[in-house]
Amino acid sequence: MPTLADPLSAQQSSLAEERVLVLDFGSQYAQLIARRVREQNVYCEIVRHDIGLEQIRRRAPRGLILSGGPASVYEEGAPRCHPDIFRMGIPVLGICYGMQLACEALGGHVDRVPAREYGRAHVSVSAQDGLFAGIPEQTEVWMSHGDQVSRVSDDFLSLARTTTCPIAAVRHRELPVYGLQFHPEVTHTPLGGTLLANFLISVCGCHGQWRMGDFARETIERLRHQVGSRRVLCGLSGGVDSSVTAALLFRAIGPQLACILVDNGLLRKGESESVIREFTEHFQTDLRVVRAETRFLDALAGITEPQEKRRRIGHIFIDCFKDAAKEIEDGTFLAQGTLYPDVIESGAAPDGPAATIKLHHNVGGLPEELGFELIEPLRDLFKDEVRRLGLELGLPEELVWRHPFPGPGLAVRCLGDVNRQRLDILREADAILIDEIKAAGLYRETSQTFAVLLPVQSVGVMGDGRTYEQTIAVRSVDTDDFMTADWSRLPYELLAQISTRIINEVQGINRVCYDISSKPPATIEWE
Image (cartoon, rainbow, N blue to C red; front, side, top):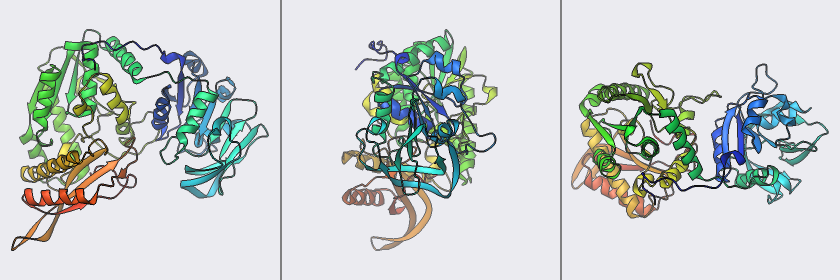
């Protein structure tokens, strides 16, 4: 494994040789499409839906994918691509709204259906070659639409149908234009990866030569060019996102990087010490530590509303960061470990009306008074891609595989009042939980596991006495992309051991519950 100071090994493939563009029509799945394409080792970029033909030609893509979206193609002002895109000779795959747009542009008709089709569906495949090579006659897919193609021109051939959607997939007879009414990019379409691979390899002629090392190398070069001789400040939390961001910058600009850790008193047990040790001994970076526990807890006193917690934490963090930054000369840029799920859930996607689910994500909210330019080198990546990138950069596995931790820290896992006593209870319970998950060999198998302290007291019996104490909820999920997640099927014996230890070892807890809700409809975090 190379060290951070070592250059990346040279890669033979060129990004420009195998590039696919995703035209974003406002879909929350646009980046998921890009991720699935990159899983096939084909480089992918997301661009605006109204990108010009000349811009497309300059990028020289092997294929174009039109994303889904919330609009209806027949509505006035609905987002559209350039109509000549379909006649450029570049293979096009339309997904959901993208299929409807392609069919309408080439002589078809789209209508609203009486009943919205949302969820799993079974399609009957009529042509098991080309796009559907290797797909059985009956296969499960994920539908999410209220409109559908009611009629296609004679130039189109229908490839698949469902009981409620007679035109579920199409191919143009002369042009390299394909359409899928369902979503191959989501995990709920089990053979979606095969469909996308068929499009990329068989239709577009890609060879799958791109690797994460290519992304790292090009990002490092871009950062060097962007930063020049100036300095970059990076906020560290100890999580993999900020750590990989710092590693990229360290590789790109070395001593021009200064890292700031704001110890807000909301970190996990031993987290502050671990971060300081890793980023002074292993990375040997210029690390500045701001001790601000009292400041944060004073601001959170009596605050129980989740969004207000996030607002206050964000404001104080900025003030603390600003004070520390004043002591660093020539600081021009602020680097943040923002990932694409953060962008989506903060409603900050540039080309789509994504609903704001969370505040305090490090996206789009950099106050102008800080005076920094923003650098977000991981903005287009998902968590698993960030981990692969971290390994590519030579980061230790313990850090790379650390479970995600929210920006507001334990404040959003301590429901209700946030104070030292309740935080200490939560820290101890969380530490026991993680210890048992690791001992069972399931830490790498689960995507995110944590404890939540509920504002709920219940009656218990401990020894010969009656108790009236607090409740811990255990949350563990499995996910590929953190956009959707399912609860982990932890063994009953493990859950029993976790419960026993928490109740016996953490004073003030007499009840432990296990959260068995998925995302959606729940979120991964409780607040």
